[in-house]
Amino acid sequence: MEIREITDKNTWESFLAGVAEKTFLQSWNWGEFSREMGEKIWRLGIFDQNELAAVALTEKKTSKRGTFLLVPHGPITQSAAPKPKAEILNVLTERLKLLADAEKASFVRVNPIWERNPENNNLFKDFRPAPLQMHPESSWKLDIRPNPEDLLSQMRKTTRYLIRQAQKNRDIRIDQSQNLADVEKFSRFHDQVSQRQRFIPFSLEYLQKEFRAFAPDDGVRLFFGYHDNEVAAGSFVVFWSGIGFYHHAISLTRYAKFSIPYLLQWEAIQEAKRRNCVLYDFWGFIDPQQYPRHPWAGPTLFKMGFGGRVFEYVRTRDLPLSKKYWLTYFFERLRKIKRRL
Image 1 (cartoon, rainbow, N blue to C red):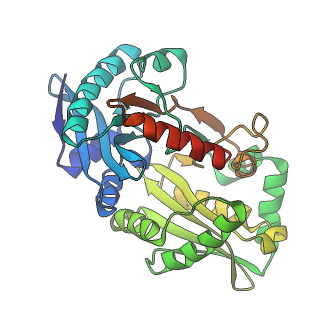
Image 2 (cartoon, helix red, strand yellow; image 1 turned 45 degrees about the vertical axis):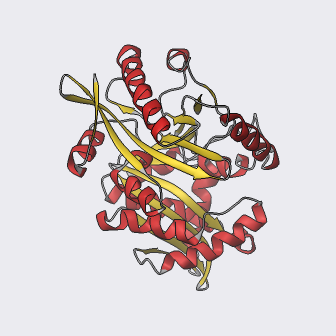
C-alpha cells in the first residue's frame, strides 16, 4: 500500500459516495472549511495496487494546549474487515509520524468511526485513549427511507403527538434559509443558549465559514421555528453524500411549552428525504440512563424519540510523539472535568 495526496474533488467525493460509514468531517468541503479557519490540511489517499482503498483528511491543530495532527472521523475505508484496516492504519500512521515531525506536532489524534468492538479496538494498540473527544464518539441515526407515515409510527408516542400538535398550531411556522446573513441571527441565539446550558458556543466566524464551505453545493440549510413571528428554535443542518446531519441547534426556554423543536426536526427530516438522503444523523449520543447528569442526556432523549438506533465508534485515540503531549493531556483532563463531560 502507498499514500498519495489527492487534489481532485471528484476523486475524493466519488470514493466517499461508495462508502456507507462516513460523516461530513471527511468531506472535501470540510477540508475547505478547515483551510478557511487557518488550518493546514492534507487529503491523504491510501492506495492498494493503484486502487483507492481509504482516505484520511488530516488537520493541523495549533492552540494554547499544543500542536497536533487530527484525523476527524477517519480514516474512511471501503473494507470492514480487520486485516485491510490494520494495513491501512499502519501505512497512515507512518505517514502521520513524518508529517508530525515536519510540522512540530507533539502527537497524532485519530477519531475513527469504525464500529466499537474488540477487533477494531485492538487495531489501535500503539495508541492511547485520548483525554477529551473533539467530535462525537457515538451518534444516534435514523434510516429515513420509509414513507413519512411509517417514520411517524416508529417514533415514541409522545414525540409523534408533539409534532402533530405543533402542526395544528397556526401561530407556529418553520422556515428554511440558504442566506448567509441569517447565520448571524442563528449565532446570536446560539450564544444565549450556551449561557443557559453552560457550554462554549461556536463563534460567528466558525458558523459563517462552515455555512460558506457547504453552500456552493447546496449542502447546508438553516431551519428556524417561529411562534408569533418570534424565533423560538433553530437548527443548522448539513446535507452531504446521502445523509442529513443535525449539527447545531438552538431552543429558547420561554417557548418550551409549544414543542417547536419537534416540528423543526421533522421538517429537517422531510427536507433530507426530498434530497433522496437515506440516513439522518442526529450527531452525538450519550446514554441517558448510564449518565443521567451528563449535559447531553436531555438532548439525547429528545433525539431518541424520533426512532433510530445508536452507532458507537472506536474511542478517540492519541499517539504521543514527544513529552509535550503530556501538557496537552493534563490540560484536557481538567477541561473535561470542568465541563462535566
